[in-house]
Amino acid sequence: MTGHDVTVYESLANSGDDRRWAFGTGFEDPLAGVDMSVPSGVDGADLAAYATMLGDDALIASQRVAEWITRLPELEVETAIANVALDLLGQARMLFARACGADGSGRGEDDLAYLRDAHDWHNVCFVEGPDADFAGLVMRLALFATWRLAVFSRLRDSTDPILAAIAAKAAKELTYHRDFAAQWVVSLGDGTEHSHQRVQAALDALWPLVEELFLSSPVERRLQAVAVDPVMAREEFEDVVGRILEAATLRCPGPPGGGQHDGGQHGGGQGGRDGKHSEHLAALLDEMQSVARAHPGATW
Amino acid sequence: MTDRAALAWNVAAGVVDPEIADLTIADLGILRGTDERDGTVVVTVTPTFSGCPAMTEMRRDLMRRLSGAGLGPVEIRTALSPPWTSDWITAEGRAKLAAAGISPPGPAPDPAPESVPVALVATPRRVACPRCGSGDTAELSHFGATACRSLYRCRACREPFEHMREI
Image (cartoon, rainbow over all chains, first blue to last red; front, top):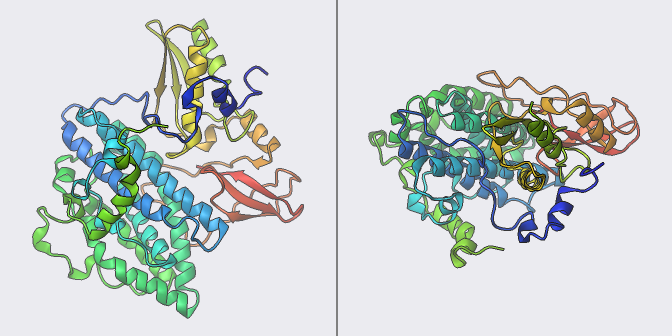
């Protein structure tokens, strides 16, 4: 019986250690104990930049999804959305930890999350705007999870073993995020006239932002076998989204982007990956970073 | 396994899940192995869900127990690959889950395929009620109070229960 009759929390509380609180500061490195060496022939700064952009997508998406907690229609949806936000937060933490371990800068995940201004974030603009309604939330989540899963299932073969392992774990999570969101899109699209209208409006509003998801950044192109060129994810994305929209009786506004993107910018300066964001990101960061910036280095 | 490695296993296996009393990291398959290398005892663990806060607590407790066990130099290594799967939960772990009113996970889906088809309708899963054993159950929500559990209800005994997700 020794040891089995006390819970972890009791043993922490009895230890006389001030760090016994489960949700205080002093979070442990999510990749503690992992060999962080950079594979030979891979540029550590590029690897860090790539891990950071994938982490940025997850953290900003997580923050937007989490804004819905307490405002959802049913308790079961509350737990689902909170779980999705928590999974994405976990993915961001691991990716940030991988970035910090690759560039030798001595930064930690908190530096990346709390001390960067909007122009230093490299998430796709797709994740940063607020959702107008529940239809907007589930539509954005369905499209985001479908895209990210298509990228991450390929990232499982990355020559960086840490990215490959993060992707393998994340792919399992993204699969059920995608299914959950897709089922709601179908319920709303194939529901009442009103719900159909709302979810179609959500799709129409998000569609111009889709094109950016498939533009490869210079870092992704340089990192060949380490990174996944998002172009490779396009066919799967279009196939899955086509199936979801058909079941939901929704009208696809056109090919991704519908030609609205300026094709002349493919070489760079293409938006979020290049640090060019909508006004929504700064407002999101203001809130997310306010405590950390008001009390630098504070612990409790 | 050396004596120190075997002792380390026994110490490490005493770390319990903060959410489910009695369920240890050995039962959950989080504890992957203990080994002795160049005088250092190496304990290898594999984390479960990306954002699971219980994982941090279990790791902290693991360090505390190992350092207090007089084992000499100890190192905890995290193995991310292969990723944790609910298939690693031991028979004893499954029995403890059921005893705690949580139905244990069935076989995990194959993680290998290049692309998994999207599920446009919820896939009904055959889950037995951990209280009365009836198979006449229904999923209320795929997402439960923690990342690893779904909510079910039993149509036979009318009780709600939790099911540990297959992953």
